[in-house]
Image (cartoon, rainbow, N blue to C red):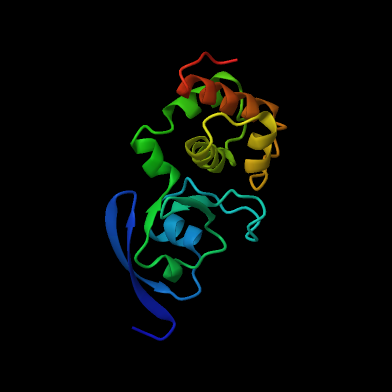
Length: 163
């Protein structure tokens, strides 16, 4: 192994992964190009747009700001892994029903971020939802429908009816 490469071991979507990677390879490019998980997108490459959001040890992170070697030993979940378990089904349904997506570029990150919010705060206000999503940019919807969808899911998860 060259000094420009390093072997990493991690768990991605429940599966053990070992790979030799360039030390400067960012996490989102590793996921997309080495493992084929293309649900996380590369947008700004500065961490500002949020399109590259994944879960690292249970917390949302920007995959463009973390090197793959920094994830050595970690548990990683992409939108594909979260979707496979059905955890996001209610959010996906609400996003579809309330037209909270258009082109879909930001949607995987929005879903992961919204789920993280609702796990920590089952009854967020509209302002709290907007604040939590502030690191995820959408160029299509204007956020109103996204906030509506998250509020509807929050109400349903609490056992109430969607607004």
